[in-house]
Length: 168
Image (cartoon, rainbow, N blue to C red):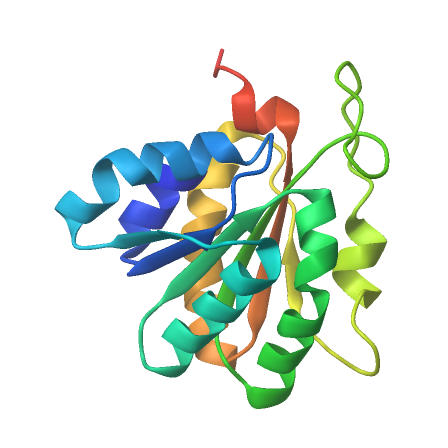
């Protein structure tokens, strides 16, 4: 649903580095995004993925970067730059349980405080947290609109159940 939201929103670019459980969205986009006029850029690491997306947004593209908790931690400085420079950016964080590489059998929504306060200083941004697969789709479209309207990063916090689950 995240990937379909990216397509429906009309975004131009997805910059990412493979990290579970966020890879399902980027894998789907890798298969179909080019046919819709988009580009998926697999960067050499999470920091580069964030910087690439920020640079693309700075040049007028509409960019998203998709990651999970440990990757989100590495993107913090870049997100702070995007706030300061008023660069629209959509960031999807597919949260997973536990610190570092996470836990294979536990789901967690533990990145809220990092999303709100992870950057140094005053870095206001929008944080959206979908509760259903349907909201994942619609919130990506909303995130693009908000990022462009307010020229700021918009973060979408989802989790591994929504990322890899199946709609009832």
